[in-house]
Amino acid sequence: MLKPGVLDPQGEAICHSLDAIGFDDVTSVRQGKVIELDVAEGTTRERVRDMCDTLLVNSIIETYTIDME
Amino acid sequence: MKAAVVVFPGSNCDRDLTVAFESVGCTVHRVWHKDTELPPGTDVVGIPGGFSFGDYLRCGAIAAQSTICRAIQRHAERGGYVLGICNGFQILTESGLLPGVLLRNIRLKYICKRVTLRVNSRNSIYTDRYSVGEEIDIPIAHHDGNYFADLETISRLQGEDRIVFEYIENPNGSCANIAGIVSSNRRILGMMPHPERAIDSIHGSIDGRRMFQSIIGIYVAV
Image (cartoon, rainbow over all chains, first blue to last red):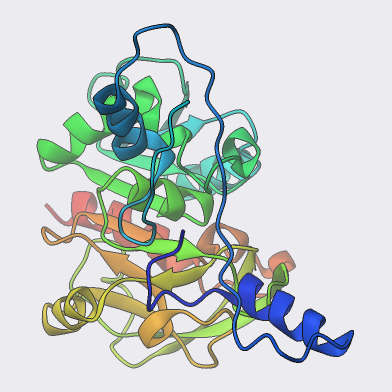
């Protein structure tokens, strides 16, 4: 997800569009992304965190959470 | 003076940048993103505009992990010069050589037009031939040129005279109207506008020409 305070014009456009088609109860929209990884057996959460910090996430503007299943 | 222009899959301004460097007498080698070293004796690296790796993940993020970018980092650590234009600017921020990040334009549109920039600083090898406060016409062509950094970073850039170019009319939502910034040692410049597209009268503006003359100028002068 984009960090609080980082302008999200795409989220704003979605919010305007929802409002235009009658969903006027939405007060703000923040847009994020989901990245699904298929990983080898035994891959640790730490390893995935390393992937996030190295490439998948830009920590200047984004935060992330990891769900493993 | 030797320049190296990097080519990624999806670069589309590498020839224009090569022509611009050659027009002021540079010897230019184009290097491929899988190369592991810059040509020996490279003085300045040009990272061109385009859509490296299709802008996948984030603009410049995948290019920033390439082997040539590691070589560029070593070049920068040695005090080498690097000029990143448009996608090149995005790659420089993603690789950590310049602070901040380029977000989607505030109106979400790709913008391709000529804009007016104010030159804020002559204190770099890229802007030496301009005067402070001068207004120059340079084209932009980008979808993600909305410069963002936290307030502390912005005030540091301002305090250190590192915002060398700013937009007169902000086209993309950039913080502090930022169009181009330099590194703390002033040897790395990243900018969204395309000076290499304003070097010949047939381009409609020749205001970018002096940037390349400035770069070569420091070598001619010494």
